[in-house]
Image (cartoon, rainbow, N blue to C red; front, side, top):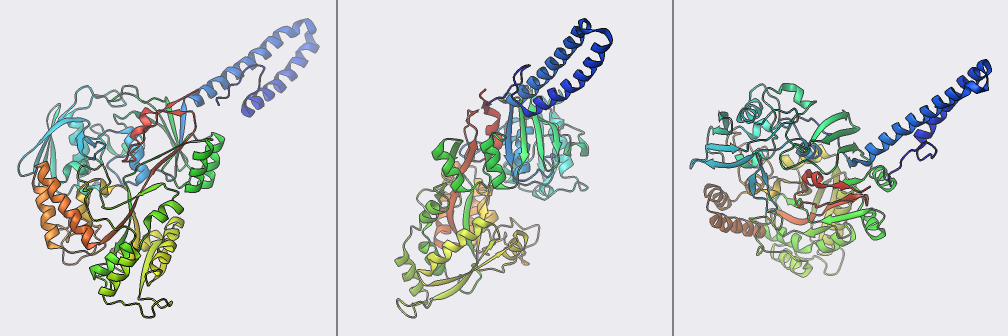
Length: 562
């Protein structure tokens, strides 16, 4: 409900206190004046008093009208920087999506389509990319977007003195040339098939922005920065002239609220109107969905949670053991009991709906008898029949996050039923990831929040040259860092290279289908589930259409009812 302050009705504690102070000050002055000149002269003072009340009432009206036009959203982590060339985390990238546009974007099938570039051409060697920009696009400061802005954005990013993790991703990019006002050419040192994907992470900034862009961003997006209170809130206002149209709300306030309990209370009180993919408990979300006190949207998501299996481990090097673990997991039971149905089972690394998703890939439905047969075949018989002695021991490592430990406990019990004794270890996140990267683990539980939207994931996570800290691979030859499973398959490497080299979509579909089939048989990862995208919002929030990608772009279309 929108609260309004009027002259004689108090709807706000803040306005009431303001009026009380005004009345006390005016009454003292009024009494002195009346004693001096008589009661007949008190009317001008009373007029002034009433005028003061009216001014305070009008001010409160304006404050509350602003509140009525402001959408308040909560995130859990503050942005690192507003410079789209700089370091990033999930919240940083999402907030930048509201301020900047990129040359290209993805559609609902995760195909790369135009955004600021209306079209492009790629030479046969994949070393020269020519982009043709849209005309009439305007920055927040009124300047027109030109090819010089695009060239500046990327040339400054790849400059040797520029310190950013994103610079390494563009190591194959030599220079960017503005040919004319609306034509820009990317010159690459070598074949660079992944350039279009890498462009998705960098918003375009005006030429000459310098370091000030980190605190005073200027983009072409639907919102422009008005104020940032560090680690507390980001205040944005609408940019009606934005390419693609302005947003449906005049202001957007993004509050940083780290504690889920605090966030739930703020939502219920109406102080926050939107929380999207936060750590609100599945139980709280389900309760709100049933009660209707808050509006809840649970939509399909693209992120994936999985178990990574160390294929270099003496036990897990046997594919039959990895397959047995996959059959022993009752993922549907975990989704229903722990996640309250807010996830869907995964069969491959790509999300359903992706243009390269293979629906016919092998699926490991819950089958404990098959798991036991595979363990027998791998040389791990049951030592005491129905007795308690296990067939083998393994260790599952997780982060110290509560949900990760809950999932691990359930998996421990499910594997115990087929004779696998699972020891659980949890660590602070950086220690945990370091162990995975160094190969100091047997099984790990992880979430991939976005990289699986692109077919590059096959090379980055399963390519033989993507094993972290592999001394046999030079940095120049490296193709990624996500192959923590230490999985090596030359035949798969060849299929990935062939899929990258062709521009024939049907041939790509055939090759990526075969890649997914091989990975399903070899099981370097056990795909668990795709967590849902969950939006919890005030009933005042309208026109919410949640994308599978979980991008913040949907916020542009939101409106607020009175």
